[in-house]
Image (cartoon, rainbow, N blue to C red):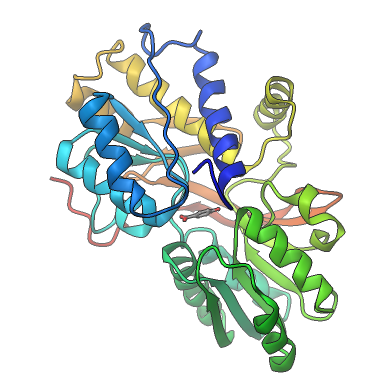
Length: 354
Ligand code: PHB
């Protein structure tokens, strides 16, 4: 998605993928790689169109993408129809590893409800018993709400209102006025990319910062901390990564990424990097012969990814089993303040590989 609100996320993902493969001398299983690159503009209709072109015309062995859940559904269709290997470096749409799962589709990121399944209890622990939910109305927002609703109500919280606006609309004013009138104990949300930066700034400008604490699925504060400025300080979120993770693996990754790309990595960079690591493990297992599908899939299913986020494994539904961190923005960094869930797996409900 190289155009629009998710453009910057896509650059970070691509950087991460390239970094992992560059660490293998730019080859996969000893073979040269040919790259094809297309832009889906976060426009759902481009999913099928782009993926078909890449598979039919360019004859690619692997599709890597994308960011937006709606576009991913189109790619998923092509992956299922053609059996081409499809690696998902971001989009969290549940169906990709639940009802529409496939032997050739693997996700290196998360499902949309995974981060928010760890959010509800963290908010209740802080005494926020009544919350308003706000997000874009499409799969990513709707499914993040699903996770939040489950975790928040199980912990005894009440969602007093669910607010939404169409993606990628950023006219938040009327909704912020409504939040001020509702006076909940806290607000929880899903926004990402350029829209997230604008939401955080508008929330503060509306006088809500410091009055009604703002929480979110961690994408809210990823890749946008410079753009959001002081309005983002103090925001607490849940996510499978945090900038400040104090491990040699994360520190080394952050140094190398900053050196190579002259910018700080974020969760998208990590997911891209892990997608690259996954592809490397698969390709090495078949010595670069990407037509050796059963052996390739077996290697991907058994992959243990030594990620900057911490080691993760692949669930039998092809989605990461991973820790979810509680983070708080401090000095333009997502600082870890706790572990909100250990080895969290998505249910994979309705997945039949076959
Ligand atoms: C999605 O559409 O699945 C999506 C997009 C951006 C994010 C997270 C999820 O940061």
